[in-house]
Length: 478
Image (cartoon, rainbow, N blue to C red):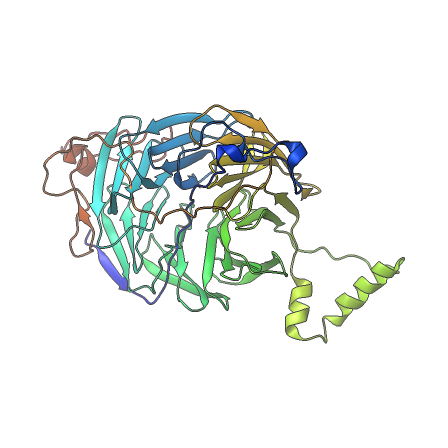
């Protein structure tokens, strides 16, 4: 299939993490705390943590990938008490992007040492499937079972994940140094979202199967800072650079169905948005110490009742006044508030959050640039303040701590922007002039493939097999 190019005035951006830790001589005991909250493990543990460049959950929140100065690690998230490391690669340094396809063995890697080069590898076999070089720094990589998306500052490359060929290129997007984009994990609604403007919060939605633009959603007045699809690909959550309001739209219609207010007092930088897999909850983390969890439910009609207290009476007056108050005021009164909240032991750190089911219970997971994974219990019925259950190091150490010894950490050193990483790839490469998917016209140059070309060309990569990716099935010509 020949690749095609779309020229569009749009924008993108990516969220990554960066490390920070308190020096060992800054350890404080609970008796010497000057503010609320327990001690942070980052300043409590003996050895300093390795510098983190990147952390992200896989598509169904069952795994966590971490890139660092020394390589990358993969963890499985099936237990609260133990963070099990399932793979570690130290062959490639300065890994700034590492994305895993569900629970398979396929990983996409970018390193600071080669920020324009993407490697797709089979980490269990220790082999490189293929590599691509691009015209500019790779800012984000997104995966699902049909597509692999590579985001540059002013372009997007859409690859067919079954043979890694470039199917389509979206060019001339507005400058997007953060690489913001979102890819639905649904096979039925395989949509890509990216900012359509550098000055206002337009979200452009693109169909990556039929390779056509679907809709443009005027989401915010300010430029977009975060986006996320739900698991069905029928809802898109957005936040702007102001960070005070989070909106949810239907896809592909682009109709606003929910609007939540994260805060009123201050503008913040939203780090990440994430739906629960059942699309009932939405979490939002920022550079502050609070993570908000919103419940996506329509308000129920309540029968009229007599006001029994002064606060009840005032509430009725305020709700009635929304019919004649200025639109900005009535809109704020009608916005949803957080169903549950998490108080992190730090502020200022880049982080990524997710709502996952671990050991059959709902949990909020936060991977932070301070080098730790925080696990909180979430009450799906009553919400409220979430309880910290466990804190795990992300440097491969088995040391973990319960939820009673955290405290705000020191100032964060924000993560470097993504680049290239070859975490699982072998050092030897085959001298082949091109890799399946090579397309100079599309602007992506394919390198050598470590899997024989006939296996990719005539075989089908079994992307649905999460135990062993990609078990290539060889087929004969006859």
